[in-house]
Each structure stands twice: as C-alpha cells, then as structure tokens.
Image (cartoon, rainbow, N blue to C red; front, top):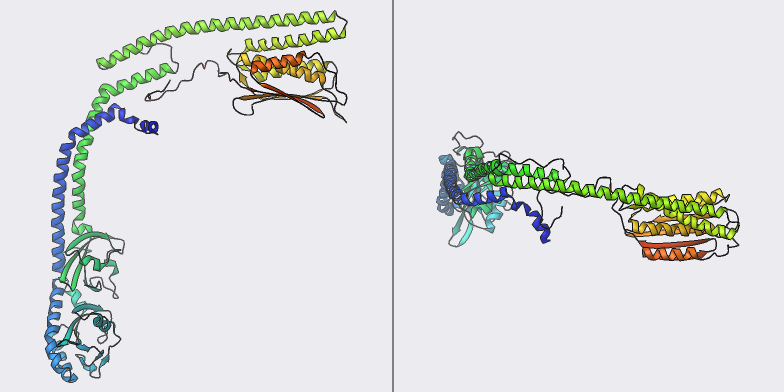
Length: 596
C-alpha cells in the first residue's frame, strides 16, 4: 500500500514540480492580498446592485401599495357605517353603492356575515342577497378572522378576476363578518411602474399565505412562469428584503427580489434577467478577482520553467537519451560530451562519456572471451560426439564378428546407448546457446532412430508420441534423454501383440502438467504371452537417471499395457533469440530499489 502511494507521488521529486511549489509559496502572500481586495470590491458592488434592485422592485409596486393601503383604510372606515345599517339591508347597500360610485376604484363592496348570506352589497342586483356560505373566501376567513388581502379568479358577484380586501367587523367581541372591497387585477397591474426601459423584467405580488395576487404576465389567472422553481413563496417571507438567483419554472435563470408592499399582508416579487440586473458583470468581477492571482502564478511558473528548461532540463533530456541508447545496446561509440550546457552538467556528461568508453572496451574484451569459450566448448562437444560415434561403429563391427545371439543382443544394447549419447552431444554443439537444450528435440530424435532400427527389422510396430516443447539446462536434459532411451528401448523389447486383433504399440509423452513440473510417460502393449524378463540393467539405469533428476518413477501393469511414469522438477533454461543476452528495462525515472 505504502509503495503504491509512493509510486503515485513520484512526480513530486521532479525539478519542475519542486520549483513550481517554491514559487507558489513565494507569491502566495501577494496573491492572497490581491484576492481579498478584489473579492471585497466585488461583494460591495454586488450588494449595491442588490439594493438598487430592491428599490426598483419597491418603486414598481408603489402604485399597487397605494391602492391596497387605501382599500384597507376604506374597509376599516366603512365598518361603523355598516354596523349601524346592517339590520337595514337596503340602506346598507345604498351606502356601499354610493361609496363605490364616488371612489371609482373598486369593482365591488359588500358586507358578508358569518352565516354567508350577503344582503349588504354595492351590486344593485344583490337586494335579494347572495348565499356565500360555501364560498372559499368565507371559509378561510372563519378559520382565521384577520385582515386579509387575497385574490379570486372569478368573483362571486362581479364574475371577474379581482383582489379582495377583507376587514373583520366586530360588535364588542362578537365577530359579525367582514367588510370586503374588490379591486380589479387589471387596475392593479396597470399601476406597476415598469417604464425602466428594461425588457424581460416582471413584477408579481402575493399575500402572506403564499397566494399570488397579481402579476405582469397573468394570463388566464396563472403566473407560474414568474415563480422560482422549487421555492415556496411563504418561505421567502422570513428573509425580509432579499435578493437571490434561481431557475424559474420556464427553465430560465433569473434574479429574484422580495420586498414588502404592506408588511405582514402583501409582498412583491421581482423577476429580473441577469443582463438587466447586472449579475453577469459582478460574476465577471469575482472571476477576475480569482483570475488575476492565478494569472500571476501561471506567468511566474512559465518564466521559471522556461529558464530551467533552457539551462537544465533540455540538457538532462539529451543526457538521459544518451544513457538509454547506451543501455539498450548502442555501443558503436561513446556518446558525445555536451558542449553548450552549464559546467555542472558538462562535468556529468564528460564522466558518462569516459564511463561509456571504459564499458565499451571491457565489453568487447568480454564478448571476445565468451566467443572463444563458446567455440572451444562446441568443439569439445563435437569431438565427444565423434568419439561416441566411433565407439558405436566399433561395437557394430564387433557384433558382426560374433555368432552368439545373446552376445549380439548385449552389444546392440550398448551400441544404442552410445548412439543416444552421441545424439545428445550432437544437439549440444549444434545449439546456438550452450546454457539451454530443447529436450523435446533430443527425445524425438532418439525415438526416431530407435524406431527406424525396429521397423527395419521387419516388425509391424506402431509408435505414438506426444512431445511438448521443453527447454532445460544441459545437466538435466542429458539424464532425462538417457532415461527416455532406456524406457523406450525396454518398451520396444517387451511390446507384444494385444489380445484380439491389432498391432503392437509403444507410446511416449513428454508434458508439463503444471508450471515447474515435467512428466515423462512410456507405455507399451502386452500380449497374452509376456516376454521373459531381461538382465535388469535397463531398470537399474532408469532408477539411476531418475535419482539425478530428483524424480520418482512409477510403473503399473494393466491387462493390455505396461506404463512407466516419472514426474520431476523442471529446471528452465534461458533460451532466447540469438544476440539477446539480457533483458533491459528502462524507465523515465529510476525508482528506489529497481534493477536495470
């Protein structure tokens, strides 16, 4: 875990990173001072803009404020007169009718008792009364009998969209009902002073219960497009005069302002486009407050990096390239010494040049010595092979002079073993590398030789082989090959015709069942009359060779076959392409503990 974290933080050791960190610390005080001052100026300017927006919102709603305040005062003033004439509906209605005609502002005035049957109304057709017992205005008023300003999409008397001012009427402590004055929404909307030359600005009023009273875009009784998305109007009241930025229901980002029109009763909500409110300018100002220190930091780092690159990094890059090419085998000549680099880097380049010259000279001497050693060793293998072939020829000549069949058989077995040794040494001196031997080729070659001898004798023997590629050290390949020779020779000797029909057969397999292990298996068919046993020399040799391989030999007899199996530890040889004498791993930055 710690090593992985250390590897991820390896870039912190680079010269460029450390120089940038030091410069960042050096210019940090100046950048912080500039940032604080610019942010303070930006906040002051933004606060001034917010105050201006609040004032413009209050000014736009000033006409509606005057009408609503007048309506509240008139409803309060009509209370005593209605109280005196409420038992005389005709006089009460005449009183309210004259009041509406003289004012010219209200569309209706009336007194609604708690039972909901209104007879005192400015409407001349209301002499017979209106039953408002199920009206929502009355029901809400009875739940909370206080002064209220609310809106109605369709008035019960006028049939138009109106804003109703409800003033409760008491006699002593008894609630008698409320005096209601209705103002046309068109009239209230016309009072919005939006002659600022600002397109896209909207004003809307709502009561303390969050019910929309009037709005500039009120069409069909809805102002949803003016409202901020996912914001409750009642929740905005506790913040007092406020300015905030949000997304409206029409997916447009706008600036909203909230100011009280009649404190506790009516509030105005202003909706401004960011361009009109000047928010974009102040955001740019805040961005500039952060951008200036950042630009100073970037310019400082750029100048420092350019200086370091010209003086140090480009020369180090060239020197690193020379080292890489030298490491991967470019040893034609020593790398040149850097001439236009600073003195310290030039000294390093000169030292590397001298070291490269020494290494090239020593490697040439070592390669020459290795080549001579390889030639001599191959020559030894070649001579051993020739001597073994000579011995095999002498044994063959001697066997021709002997008439005793048993003696001939003994000499033939000795000749086969000598020929197997000669085949091994022939493969050794023909191999390009002497530290690795292809055991599969050796065994395949020897099996082919022994099979040809057997088939030449006229025997209809079927030989099967499954030899996988295995590369081993010579010290292990030689005893393995000899063991396979003895086992295959015995299999050829004792292979019998199986019961029923079929040819005698012998099978040889060399596999690696799992990494690090090798498996040799030799099997032969067994006839109904097994061949008598021999001298046992082959078995002794097999046991001796298995001990050298540190393996275990297992044999088992089956009704129609005899199987010999040996599992041994596999020693892999370094058998790579010619000339690839080492694996070189290069990294851009050497890690601690790494080996190249």
